[in-house]
Image (tube, rainbow, N blue to C red; front, side, top):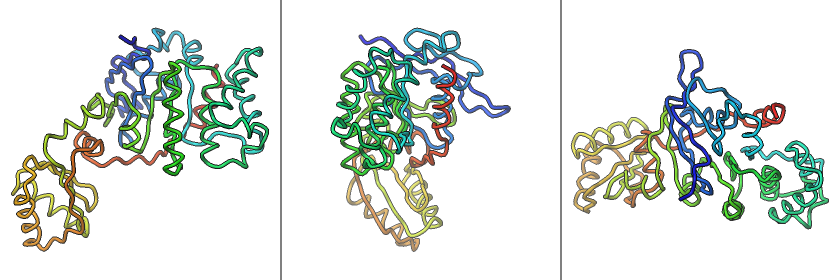
Amino acid sequence: MAKNIVEIKGLVKRFGDFTAVNSINLEIKEGEIFGILGPNGAGKTTTINMILGLLVPSSGTIKINGLDISRHGHEVKNMMGLMTQETVVDNDLTARENLEIFADLYHVPKDQVEKRIQEALEEAELVDFANKKAGTFSGGMQRRLSLVKSMIQHPNLLILDEPTTGLDIQNRVNMWKHIRDLVKTGVTIILTTQYLEEADELCDRIAVIDHGKVKAIGTALELKKMVGSGRVLELVVENAPEAQEAFKILKNKFKMNPAIDGNKITAVMEKAAASTLTEILASLDKSKIVATSVSLHLPTLDDAFIKLTGSAFRDTASESYTSTMTTMYLRR
């Protein structure tokens, strides 16, 4: 059985009277991709910053590879890598020069620098572009360079914050391949993402956090099963007031437990019979509510997220890790 590389117990973070993280417990196993999902303001950014050692917990403990970060901060930080949602490359420097700077920041031994850089270029498929300026690269190439920069010191634990933000689907799928290849080398990954299909595709396990608490932990399949055994009804109506009325109809007349997001309503139909759907549409029509879109589907991770947090996945990603990364280097 794989050992735990991250152990978090009773983690709390308060900012004055506001509790951002409220008694979180997490265990992340060596060699897994562990997703942390949550709506904006859920507490996941605060949790990540405490794992990085950039915020001091109000209470609770964080151990990385058995070391308490409060007592072994320097050693723990040397075990970790971080890829931010922003593409952190210097456009005026070549790919090789970008890697040289990060090798120096991560204190890679001098006799290993060239070997590590060559490995990174190969992993990022940038060997033929090693001496070209990063500013001439496509978005996908820059993201791959940003990824291998965070790996130059061979970390035990890699935190990927929105690794595919801004990429088209082809480059996103390519990035997924690189992430899977990294796991094969033994690295453990903590992944945050705004794309739930990405978490579904990549993560071995997922923690859903909301209001500073862990709502659920499990595989994507286990989280989907929380939605129910039926089909998910998704209704889109013309406006928000009509959505509120449709919500009441599903809740009161059909005894469902719907969720609402703008002009979209979702609810689980345990008995997904055509007659039930016809009755629902007739009730909406009687109330002069126009359904612009109606669908039935098997539960998805999106549906599980809505059930657990009460809203669709929204993350404005307002908090940047760029300054955080600089701080991490300065504290080494």
